[in-house]
Length: 99
Image 1: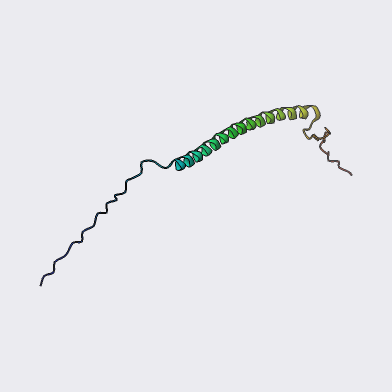
Image 2 (image 1 turned 90 degrees about the horizontal axis):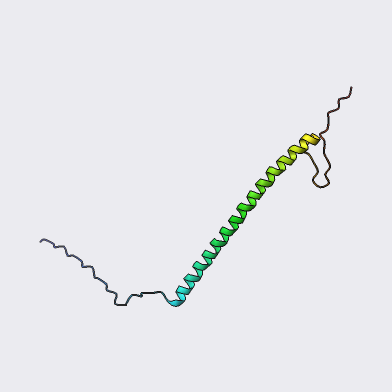
C-alpha cells in the first residue's frame, strides 16, 4: 500500500488590534528630556575641551619663555639651577682633588 504525504498548512495570524501611530506624550517628554541632557553634556564637554586647549597652549608658551630665562641664567650665572622659593643660585660643586 502506498502512503501519501500530508502537507501541514501554516495558519496566518492576523492582528486585528490597530497599530499606534505615535508614542504617548509622557514617553515623548521622557525621550526629549534624555536627548536634551545628552546635548547639554556634549556642549559642556566641547566648552571644557576648548578651555583645555587654551590652557595647554598657555603652558607651551610659558615653557618656551622659561627656556629663554634659563638660557639667560646659564649665560649670566653659569647654571640654571635656581631655588625658585628664595632665588638662591645652586652652583655646581667642583671636584676638589687632594694630594
